[in-house]
Image (cartoon, rainbow, N blue to C red; front, side, top):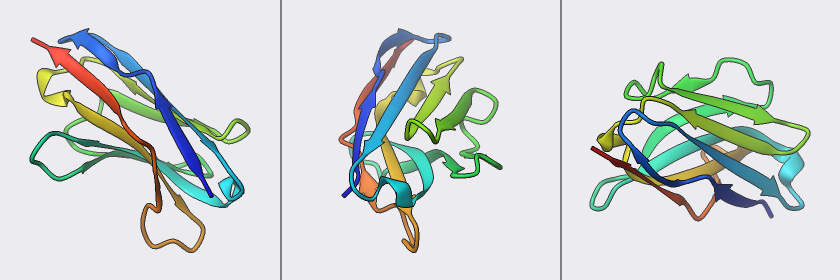
Length: 120
């Protein structure tokens, strides 16, 4: 009902930048309230990175990425982006786009993920 397609991952050296994008489509795209990014490394649980609401106000960030990452969204295009600056090797992970729709208690649609690798 909502499809999410991520793009923009890749390999970058420490200190570099990458921009991830996620495009949402489907019958229920108009019900999206919050769009966010999560990341996961092997053998660890998926962790929250950043999120932004429909209104665009008050984006939230994990402590580990504050001041380095910036989340933004374009409601007209149903896209959310994550600008990642000053990347560190510990940012290496598969990054997932996720959305929470109206009346959903948690993120209920997920993308397939895009790999981000930061070399030291």
